Structures are given as C-alpha cells and as structure tokens.
Image (cartoon, rainbow, N blue to C red; front, side):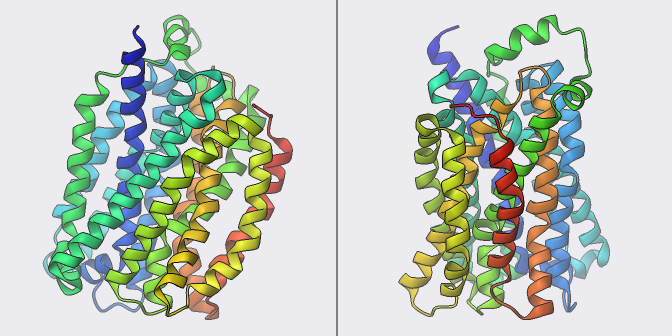
Length: 415
C-alpha cells in the first residue's frame, strides 16, 4: 500500500467529522427559526426545539453499539460509509419537512424522528474517525493526526454557522425564520451524500485489517465491557468535559447571546463564526502539544484554564462593545477546542485494538448524550428558572471539576 493512498484515506476519514458536526451544530444555531416554524406561538417553543436536538444525542449510544460492532467486525470503512448515507437522509428530510401551518404538531414530531435517525447514524462516526486516524498515523504524531477529527468537527460548526449567517445576510432575519433556514440543511445533505463515493475508496486501517480477517469472537462490545472497563470510564469522563464545554462555548453560544443578551440573529451568528474560527486555529497546536508533552499534562493545564476563564468570559458576553464581545467568545472557545483536540488521540489510546471502536464509541456517546446534547436545553431552562446569566459558566466549571480531575488521575499516559 502506497503512502499516498494511506494519506488520501486519512484525509477522507477526517473530513467526515465536518458533516457530522455541521448537522448537529446547525440544528442548535437555527433553534429560534425552527421554533417559529414547528411550534409557533408556544411559550416553550425554543425549549421544545432544543429538546428535539437533544433527542438526536439520546440515540447516539444505540448507533454506537451497532456501528461499533460493524467497525470492529467488518472494518472501520464499512461503518463510516453507512453512517454518511443515513446522515444525508436525515438532513434532507428536515429541510423538506412542512411546518406547523401545514402538518400541525406532526411536523415537529417528524423532525423529532429525523433527529433520532441523525443521532443513530453518527453514533460511532466521530469515534470511528478518531480510531481510524490514530491507528493509521505515525506513533509520534498520533496527537496531531487525530486532532484532524477535532479540527474538522469545528470546521463543520464553522460551515454551519457560516451558512446560516450568509443565508441571513442575503435574505434577512424574517425570511430565515419563515423558510430560508432550510437552505443550510440542504447543503448539509449534499455534503453528506458526497462522502459516500469518497469513503468507498478508503483503505482499511493497518491495525484492524488483519484483526478483522482473523477475528473469531464477534462480540467486541462484550469484550470491551469485560476487559476494558477502565478505558471506557476514562473515555466517558474525558468526553464529559469535552461535550459540556464544546456545546456551551461554541454550539450554544449564538443562541445564548441572542436570547439572554437580546442580540439580533445576524450578530449572534457572527459571534458563532468567531468562536468556530478560534477553535479551528488552536486545535492542531494542542494536538501537537499532546505528542510532545503528553496528554495528562495538557489536560491539566486546560482544566485550570476552563475554571479560570468561564465566569469572566460569560460576564463579558453582556458587553455592548463588538471587540470585547468577540474577544470573550474566542477566549471561551479556545479551552473547549483544546480539550477536544487532546482527547482525539488520548481516548483511543486508552484501549487495546480489540474492541476499541465499540468500547470507545459507547463511552464517548454516553457522555455526549448526558453532557452534550442535553446541555443546551438544560442550561436554557436553568437560566429561565433562575434568571442568572452566568449559569453556563457555573455549569461548565462544575462539570469540568467533577469529571476532569478523576479523568486525569485514572488515564493511562500515552506520550
């Protein structure tokens, strides 16, 4: 196998996270527009939409079990090709779904089902790509290589908020709420469809190719739960911090600025672009730092940064000064992106190759359900209940302390 073929396959694999996070980020970025389409006039319309987005995450563990099994027994590429096809169907379905004026409440119910399909389809997408990149890279550059997955997830978020912002700039906020929110979903469906022929040309990772050929035990998840419980726990804890901080300081941020600080849709989406760009810039740097200094040291520094910057950062989000607000958005995004970049190689390296895809997918996706998809509606509800604008900062700090410290203590150093 030529080096160029391996690199092409790694590039195709890494680009898959763009589609996954385009889809999941877009739904939260357009939450206010979706609420007026499917739940007009309802007092809790925004919470209903955020809850619908969270449902997609609830189905991720089921997808993790199914696609993790496929990835461990039939190969990483088979799982990734199937996942891309289902993602395209789910996004196109939402783009074409009639609103409340046509279908009544059944439009929202069908969107709920499509979010469930989307969550199922990406249950092992991000983890599978991290595993593929880590297994295909040089041993001394696993952090940098696997960070492509994290960087491309942030590119996906950037494309999502960027497409929403450009659409709003062209047609206006009113048209976005009425019909133009569908345009970015169509774009996402097309991007996912393009991944299908590309992924069919991927070569299998060198670690799994021989293993799949010789594997006699077709119960990789059972093996992982029996022999790799500690790596699964570490995967869950690391992913808990990553999910909570990422969804609060990058994905949910435009909705927070729009609803809590009364910014218009265009301005809120512009700040989302700033957060995504800041995250993309720092991600490869922290992937390389993980190779040079070891993930445990990098995680420790990031944990301290999250705790120190959360409250000041969210205080500055109430500023009326454009540059102050932009700096605050970037400051909050950087530690979240840094944690995800470091985790991209640190998590799969906790596992042995046998059962790695299944065990990691379950640990990661359970955390993503509880502390990723559920975080925006939970925090929005807490803000509504308490009237406290700093609720996201306090929530992020608490989760980071509770999950981050034991993760750092329990993890196996993989420098």
